[in-house]
Amino acid sequence: MSRRVLGIVPARLASTRLPNKPLYPLLGRPLIEWVWRRVEGMSVLDHAVVATDSEAVAEVCREMGAPVELTSTDHASGTDRVAEVAGRKAFESFDLVANIQGDEPLLKEEHLRAAITLIRDDGWDIGTCATPIGEAAARRDPATVKVARATTGRALYFSRAAIPYKRDEKPTDDDLEREPFLRHIGIYAYTRDALARWVALAPSPLERLEELEQLRPLEAGLRIGVAVVGAADPGVDTPADVLRMEERLAEIENLHARM
Image (cartoon, rainbow, N blue to C red; front, side, top):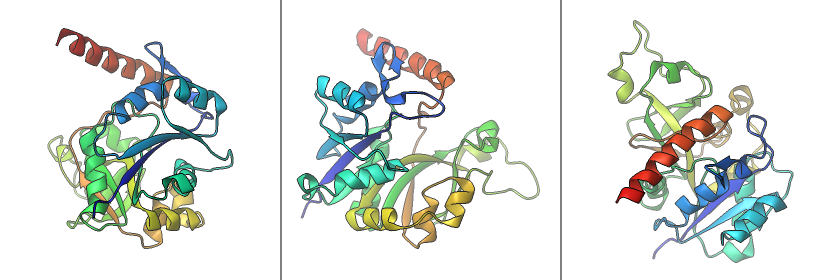
């Protein structure tokens, strides 16, 4: 029997590094619109909605024809917001849930598909993705989340530190282009049970230490599969990211205009 997938885009208005992030304009259009236009055409999803605690974001979504669900303002994370929406009666027919970051307008469908395949076909509780980290500067940057995984694909640890550590010498540029030096891509797919278990857990010691919520289910014993995929564009977190993203979006639009 086919297992239906619900895609949910959490969009929180409050952001310390980029105020009003979902509404922040990129090339004159709000960030959430760029993300939604990417998501709405993805065939791997049977349905998709935006989940937000902001009426202003909801109004933008309605104007562009995006299904939107208003949520509690008390959620500590996007995962909590996704779980609230997934638990509503209107969506009870969906077996699997995908959490699609609301600040990644260049998300690739094949990456999302890889995360979904890990739970739909391979039996993991949670699926996510990683890509070779590529650069020494990113490896050193605590804002870049690294992941170490077993040969089975099971996540062993996520960290802001430079893991895995190469004891005798620094990793070469060639080393950083392949495993085991991986950057985590923050998209998730869950079974309904795994999502419910995740949000029912209290924040864990390692989660609090690293400020990485994915350590909570990992510490609790949920099985997280990690698919290694090709290069991924970073999301939008800062004004500098906005400038970089506008350049990429302009390149893509110009390319499409010439085709």
